[in-house]
Image 1 (cartoon, rainbow, N blue to C red):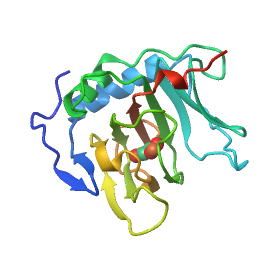
Image 2: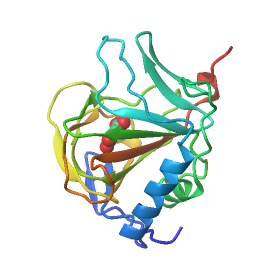
Image 3: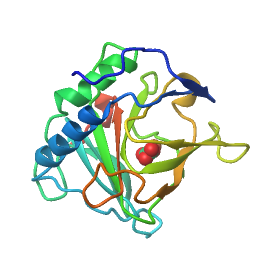
Image 4: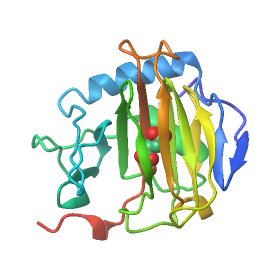
Length: 215
Ligand code: SIN
Ligand code: FE2
């Protein structure tokens, strides 16, 4: 994919979170957004209800062999969107980002896509439903700025925050793989990338086969 930043060392390392600033140029960002919209046409973003009974403020959908689902019973990976459609494959342009920064030669199984509309956020959490944690999670920001908070492998304690901007890529590997993280808020309207404003976030993950549904 052209438009990838040529220097492959992170610009920042905060608590083991490796941040590549403006990894994607505007052309690559624009192409990716229209591609993602087209590929997800039959598997549109939806707003899950969490085990707490609260509805998430972000909308989400997935690409890949497995997609991440939440409902009142918990969290799991599944092969199909709740509407019964298999998740579409992870687009090659997205896999190219993983290949450039992940440092591993195994492809991700899941690419979760979150859409943050105005006044949405994501509480502090760990990504821990994947069954194997030696692989990094790679996150891509498209659209409005987001205040990303980075914590520790246990809940609480000191945290750092950073405004992620469109085109930024974050690699959560090593010590940061199981670190708590979240999005405090987005700065709605800071980017012209998405026609209706807001932010898309992609997170690519490797998921263990033992996490496949058995039925
Ligand atoms: C997530 O942790 O699932 C999303 C992180 C982000 O939106 O930057
Ligand atoms: Fe996460």
